Image (cartoon, rainbow, N blue to C red; front, side, top):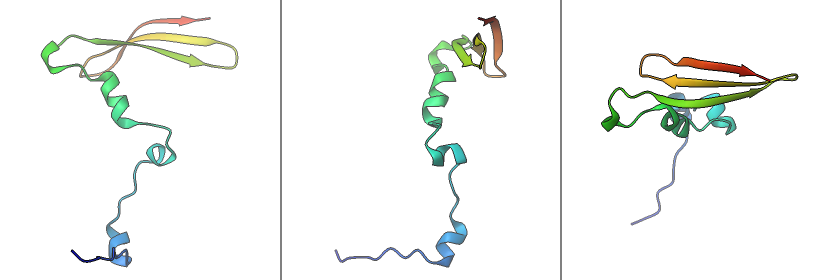
Length: 80
């Protein structure tokens, strides 16, 4: 098999679609993010819980969230 030069000309770049900004910056792994929230298929309508912690200048905010398929619901909220 011979050597084939990859041609990246104007036609190539016209159709090229860039990745999402946070993906390009390496800040967000969307595959891992999806796996955090999607429940296994054999668990049917069982909600999946997660803890969300946010840091502000003054406080630490913790939330427990339930993730159903329709929309996330915050179960409780704590500020310290």
